[in-house]
Structures are given as C-alpha cells and as structure tokens.
Length: 432
Image 1 (cartoon, rainbow, N blue to C red):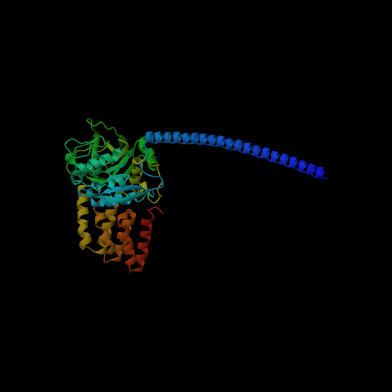
Image 2: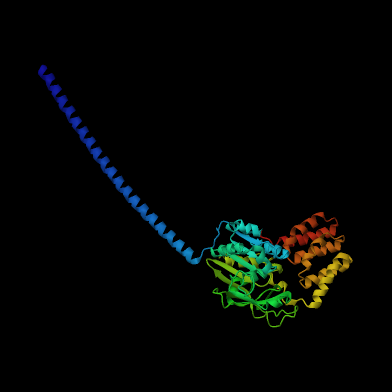
C-alpha cells in the first residue's frame, strides 16, 4: 500500500513538473513573440517615422516651391479670404468731389473695402493696414506739400514692398518725373506743356492698346470710349528716369478750349500708363472714370491690376460705356452759361431750375454735381424729383444718403413714388 501511494505521488510529481515545464516554455514563447512583436512595432515605427520625414520633406519642398513661385509671380499682398483694403488720400490739395467719387468707385467692387486717409494717418502707420492707395484729383503740387517728404518716402516704400498705387489726374501728376515740378518720380513719365494746364475739360475720347483691352475686356470691341477729362497731365517718357511704363490707353481728344492752350497737344499721348516699382505696381490715369457715369468701374479694375487680383465682372448697371458715345468738350461760352445756372438755382422759378438741370446733365457739367445736393430739398416737388433724377442718372453715389433721406421725408405722393424709383436705380449700382 505504501509503495502504491509512493508511486502515485511520484507520477503526480512528474506530471506537475511536466506541466510547469510546458508553462515555462509557453511563457518563454510568449515573451519571444512579445519581443518579436515589439521589435516589429519598433520597425514599423521607424518606417512610419521615415515615411513621416519623407512626407514632411515633400511638403517642405512643395512649400518652398510655392514660395519661389509666389516670389517670381510677386504674389499680391492680401489674403483671398479678406477684402483688399484701399485708402483714398484726403488731404489739402485733393478736390473734395474727387475724393468722394474715388471712394464711391471703389465701393463697386465687393472684394474691396475703402476708407479715406490723411497726412497724419500715413505718418502714424496706417499704410501697414492697407493694400493700395489712391491719390485723387485736385492739385498735385499742393498734395505734395500737404504730404511732406517723409510721408512720400513712406508711400514709395509701401509700394515697393508689394502694394498698389493709383494716381488720378493730379495724382498722376504727383507720381510723375517732371523736371522742375514737385513730384514723387515713381511712374517714369514727365508732364509737358504744364504752363497751359488749364487747357479745358469735358467728356473726352480714348482708345485702348492691346494690353489695355486685356484689362478692360468690356471695352475691347469699341474703337473709342469716353470719360470725363479735367486739365489732366500731358505725358511723355522721361528720358532721365530708369522706370519703364506700359501704355494701356491713348488720349484721342484734342483739348485746348481754354487758357490759350495749343492744339494737337493732348491727342496721341498716354491716357493710362502702368509700371512696376520694386515688388509693387503703379497705375496713372490722366482723366476721371470715377466721375463718369457707366465708367466708374474702371477704378477698382485698375486697383485689381496693381494688386494682381484677377479680373472681376461688375454689375451690368455699373458697366455702361454707351451712356456717352461722343466727345463733349466745354467751350468758353458753355462755361459762362454753366456759371449763370448757379444763380438760377438760387433765384429762378422751378421750371427754370429744371431746364437748367436738363442742360447741365446733357453737357455733363463738372460744377453741377456740387449744386444739386440741396435741390433734393427745394420747395418745389418738381425740382426735387428732377434733382433725384440727375443724381441717379449720373450714378452719383456720394449723394445716395441724401437721396434716401429726401425720399423718406417727401410728403407729395407722386414725387415720393418717382424719387423711390431713382433711389432704387442708384442703389442697384452697388454689390448685392
């Protein structure tokens, strides 16, 4: 019996030992598999890390390529998800109506935001927040004096850094490189015959070069187009300037109605020129699209060129080059008649005021836009309605608020209805 028990114990021990050995072997195998798996994971990790490095290297390579392409293409200094910020110089020397009209013209572009800027704004660093500036019409040398040398150097550096600048009439004068004339010397042109600067004004004609047709495809099929001209510069190449400019449009009107100006001076000369300045761009136009019904859109289009923004199609209500299809230059007699109408608005009958507005609108009077604002509140509803029509049909957005207020307070039912129609027409110029 003892031997049998001992045998059973011996067998049990052997079985336990075998089980333990198997367990140990299994554990060792598991440990080996774990080590193998861990090594495999490390290997995969290294592979992933290597692939990640390759991906990062590829991304960096692409990024570097994009940066090089951006540098080569002189990428515009504004974000696609942000409106381009435009500043219109509002300083002594800028004509008030020219400032108003420049602001209104820029507002036609839904991708732009516009504000006025002063001399102190420029000195105080406002240019850091802007993408482009407009120097409007007025007096170039007076604007020069108002800006001062330090601010003009700030403007030059602003443009060279990759920003845009547009000079309109006096602004184009200011941008020029005219000998013995206070100017910024940034567009490569010089003004000639400045002693006859008061040569005249009116609706003038111009033609586009092939490059101009690319920028203004809406006018490409037209032999001639028309905008308002008011004693703008007569440009030729400045031989002493190293800046080369491109001519996008040519002046075709021979303006010499006033100031004993010689004939055949303005026609055949540049109407719109463009040039690079450092990384930036400059556009200079001798006339006033911003003051011309149906042509205001040319201003934001030129700004788009300076900022390398793609061409954008504007509303058909704003793009209407057929409003003027002929040259209308104010003669000396026309100017005298225009001046007399100032007193008509002060002292004449409603019928005479309406007749005056008819003539002034037909002739595209430069001065009348400064007189018509208060006629919205004339004692006669006949005059109030005709003033509303004048403002709407000349696309005069600077008086939009005046027209809206006049409509709101109008008590005569028929006049109110007509004024509402003109108000809707004027508002339809703006982006939705």
